[in-house]
Image (tube, rainbow, N blue to C red):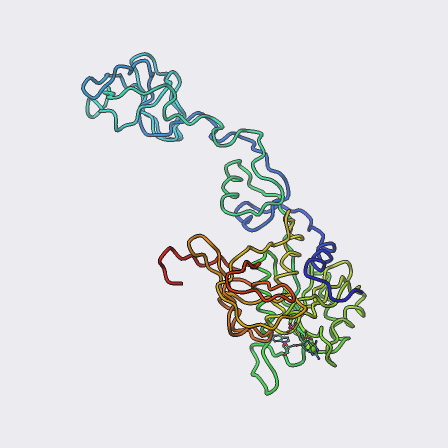
Amino acid sequence: MRVMLCVEEALQEVLSHCKRNERMHVPLKDAYGYILASDIHASVSVPPFDRAALDGYAVRAADIEQATPDSPVRLQVIERIGAGQVSTKSVGPGQAIRTMTGAPFPDGADTLVRLEMTSAIGEPEQTHVDVKVAVPCGEAVAREGEDIKSGMCMLRSGITIGGAEMALLATAGIASVPVYRKPVIGILASGRELTDIREPLAYGKIYDSNSYMLAGAVQAWGGIPRLLGRAGDDVDELVQTIQSALPHVDGLVTTGGVSVGDFDVMIDAYRKAGGEVHFWKVSIRPGTPFTFATIEDKPVFGLSGNPAAGFVNAMLFVQPAIRAISGMNEPIVRPVRAFLSGMPEVRAVALDRFLRADVFIKDGTVFAQPRTQGQKAAILSSLTGTQGFVRIPSKTQPQAGDLVDVYLLHMPVSFADGDRV
Ligand SMILES: Nc1nc2c(c(=O)[nH]1)N[C@H]1C(S)=C(S)[C@@H](COP(=O)(O)OP(=O)(O)OC[C@H]3O[C@@H](n4cnc5c(N)ncnc54)[C@H](O)[C@@H]3O)O[C@H]1N2
Ligand code: MOO
Ligand SMILES: [Mg+2]
């Protein structure tokens, strides 16, 4: 087992143990957030037929060549159709079919003149129409396949399905969507101090907040959390809980028990459960004692017990793992570059620091302001409202104005020119 990997080495090791889940099908209405498991080819063209793009009259361009507002051309109206209706007649010389947006373009006509450029004649039957403008051939006609051509690849395997993708799948008449099964991530909190949130708190104890922090994060990253509750600091109890949970999950996240204390027994438990520990410690702060193992071929993430340290561990390693198991083509979440708008005093250490920061866009440029308070690994309250983590490379002390990497949790707030920041 190697000690103290850097983030990138640790991430490679983690991802090398994350296999994509198997495929399944979901009804289109439930497909949001899944990763597509096949290329999707269009089975029909969209639109499937030439159709009117405006409300108006389908006519022959040659008939209205001379039309002007002062000298309109009168045509005979032989039919009226709306979207979903098909004309039964063909437009001959001197004729028009009143045609609404979305209706299949009538035979015989070669262009469409919009309603506003016409006057209907002969109330209430409207047997004729005066056309006040000449229009070229093909005006306001949406051609078959203008949007999607039958047979073309509309969506590639590995993309995330959102609203636009669901619409495209519906357009192609796909009711059952091939996706990768979402990863089920077990979450186990350890420590005899931890108390169930429904119980009264005795002196010396705390409520288990990590389980809920991770339940939210796992969902935000596309996984399904399965809360396994709390275990004490007893190796056999941990082994038993881990072994009974593993068959029901695709990955397991534990929190606590990975440092050097007398009751930090998580690594022993992983080994006793038949696991292989791939590394212990990453050169980051907070979250140095992060541990990664596989047990029964499943990835197991040993997060620091300190809430903010555990969160940084999860963001850096559990998030890409979920994305890989979900079937995403690009599981690694890359940071954005931002200018430091200010920098609190931090001691330069031989570890990469991850600082909770406010991130905002000013006149189109991204800035990050690390919080001056609440950067300790045990401080939970400063995590809320944090838009991202600024990464300060080891042994460096960047100043305001320097470019840094920011791992975004939320979209930055945007300020217009002149707004106060
Ligand atoms: N002598 C040393 N002591 C410590 C070192 C070290 O290098 N030498 N490392 C420190 C660092 S850094 C961290 S981070 C922590 C990591 O601790 P563990 O991962 O072993 O976690 P625990 O000891 O179980 O708990 C630490 C802390 O977090 C609280 N905690 C744990 N679980 C939860 C939970 N589910 N919800 C809320 N809070 C939780 C726990 O009560 C402790 O206060 O070790 C340092 N020590
Ligand atoms: O690694 Mo610990 O997370 O600094 O506090
Ligand atoms: Mg400990």
